[in-house]
Image (cartoon, rainbow, N blue to C red; front, side, top):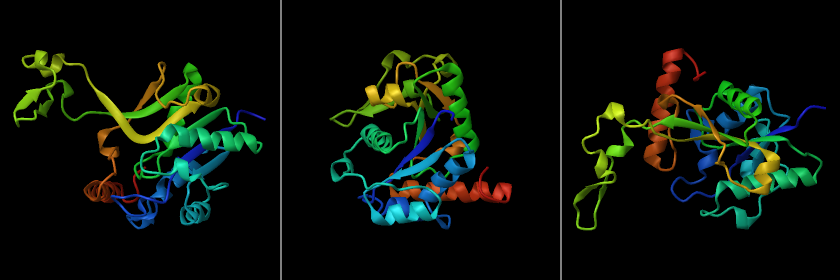
Length: 238
């Protein structure tokens, strides 16, 4: 038997800013459906597991073809729980129940632009370069080294005043987490549960396939982006 590969989709039931966020309909489907479907269609996972504290999320996940073999403990399901301990809990639970994964992919439940091909590309990078993690990223739309902050007295202050006169073309390109997925080498991750590692490599995504979804405004923006892409290609985004 080859290396076991699992997808873990963290999807708790509560959300203050967008109630029942992970089950809310997005362009006609529960938003978690896009992550589950992309994981299954990638063809690289032995198991697609949803980690949730909610019976309703678990039932929907199973209807979509994923597994929800446990309910996440309450101490790992509040507003302040980071992602890494949730993934570590799921992998340890699976290991204790006969599934010792070699590679795992944390996939966020609110990632409607996730493409199966990007998941496959991330796995290829992880295994070919033998690194401990691969992170989906995209570029910032503006040069971050020209960024401002607003001081306590209301004045604008440059965060990097040394770059006030630097040409944009001479500034290094900056990237941010795309909020879609992280591939992990399980053994090293469980020794030190961190998604970003000293040897992390990127999967670079185009900005038109990236939208953080934390607020109702984010949700509306993402839905408009998704529907525009769907109209352009005559179906859902590839």
